[in-house]
Image (cartoon, rainbow, N blue to C red):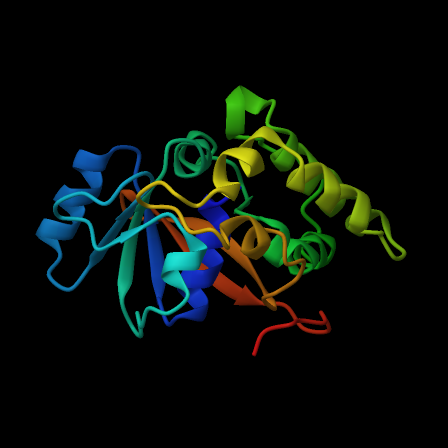
Amino acid sequence: MRAFTVAAWAFSRGVERIVLASTESEALALKESHPGWLALKDGAPAAGFDAVNSPGLLRSCDFTGRTLVQKTTAGTVGALAVASAPLVLCASFVVAGPTARYLQTADSGPVTFVVTGEEGKADEDLACAEYIGQCMAGGDAEAAPYIHRARTSRAAADLAGGLRSGYHRDDVDLCLEVDRFPFAMVALQEESLLVLRPVAVPDIPSAIR
């Protein structure tokens, strides 16, 4: 639910690119070998990491011009697992419309949705994927039923309290702001790294301020 909401928020806070890492040790090694890079992980804060996987905690940060290394338990690992695909987009509700439009205009052929949470069974991820699919099918897709599924999912219940270190009580609401941002997020191989960047998609209404 949070990984690619956090990525979108990071771009909105000025991050230039996000390098996806599979382990915490890899994330820290990349940060150490590239002065000026920042590292982010899920769970509680830890030594060497500059931020955690929480949109509520990230929204006040200033990351202008920085490169962020992101490691999460499911999201980044899932993206890395399909890095060899011809086109990889990382998505969440906050960029759902732009993601659908990008896929429509990219002439990408058949689209495979990779659901990373709960070994591919996370209802909040399935709801987001199905909503993007409906947007791609044309017409006005009604977001409310999909948002309801995500809001009542196990992941949302786990986050709702916002009492654990590395979590914020607004995280669920921030994850469910449909089309908050006007860009899609495209992951490309750059040398040995999988790098995520925002790509502006025109004609998508956005609540970004």
